[in-house]
Picture 1: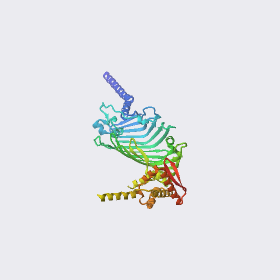
Picture 2: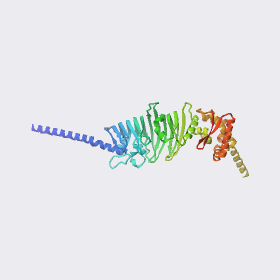
Picture 3: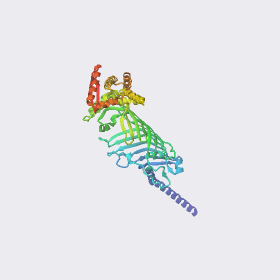
Picture 4: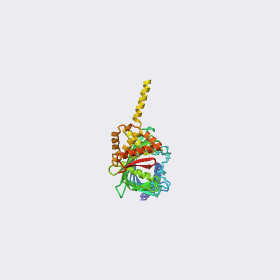
Length: 371
Length: 114
């Protein structure tokens, strides 16, 4: 009987000990494991990361975060990113073969991206640059972020990034009369990077589309759509990009016109189409803008207001689309660090028809188009 | 060798006849351009229609060197004044009520009143 009692006591003590050990591990993971993971992710992204809870699916190499945040570094109002859900799927092959972490897929749902510019003109996102990982351990980040362009490393380590049903908040303290704020919803991003060839001199092919909507209570909502293909080299990016905007309300950006141009608007919407190409660090871009319901106001007291007003009024009849819209085009050309902005063909034609001294330029433009 | 030189001189003089713009041609062309542009105001296809009409009147205008003559005018204010007044007279002689308008910044227009 005593033996049974002793065995029972040992059993009870063992159960209590196991329970204490399990509870200890759970408590350790709760209080320290989370912060360890947060630190590891912060190092990996080059930005401070926080999350509320995490769940793992080891079979699928998937990590799910709830209430995931990327923090701003200093003196900014909001976190850079807050997302209800963030899912990371690790690249199993690279993890098993190379013992390196690369992501097959990152999915962010219902996120809020806060882009902020402070009074010194610095963006919150530019404070957060990737840091080199301490790779003394067995597992290292697949690419070392400090050795070359951030985009190359990103493309190397992330095969797919999807952002769904998210919001962009932009706040600008830099613009005079600021802060200027605007919210864009329906923000979606699909980013896909292709396979590396194995040679470090070859580019990584990347494709992405980005879209969002600018809500408008007076007119229809504004829309923005960008689709791009890129060849990402270690020290250079070649890209072809198409950007379409629809019904963007100029009044929503009035502080910028009031601060930086000699004119502003009573009413005005614009849609635009841009074809942008960059090859060997040389830009070649054409943008056509269509203005609807435009009512231009020349600021009083501006030195060249008279010239602008008289010229603009005379040019407008030659920039009409036939639907009461005004079409305006411009080009951007030249080296990426010093590009030149010039008149587009349509605007050149209009000026050539109005200004006698520009007739030769206009005819030269016609000759170019005929070739 | 003489033949080559002669042919070269002939070629050069022919091309200069084709490409050069003299004062009278310039005055006539700009006057017609201003009148045509005025009639096409507000038309969404103004530039294409302008080019079509001007080609009918001046079949070679696309291969002529307009900019060189413009540069000459811009550098010589007396010449500029004389040429622009000739253009204005030409437009008025065709029944239009017009005037020269300085837009500032070296830009000038001839405005036809509606």
